[in-house]
Length: 75
Image (cartoon, rainbow, N blue to C red; front, side):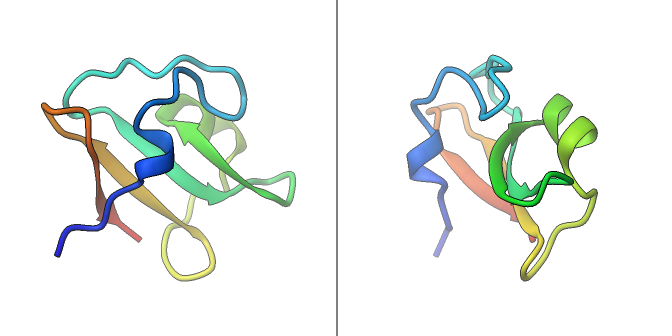
């Protein structure tokens, strides 16, 4: 079973208004931020606002497939 991040698949920007590339291989994060709450983030936003950790209670990394789906890769 492949876990997907369906709610983020069709978004144009992350929670910090950074645009998603929508290209195959793009990393998208659903993770805790240094500001406290969780956020949907691009790689750029995760580096700037993320806590840098993935896993239970920290976050997940998803990778965009050629069909646009985001499949869980880590966390």
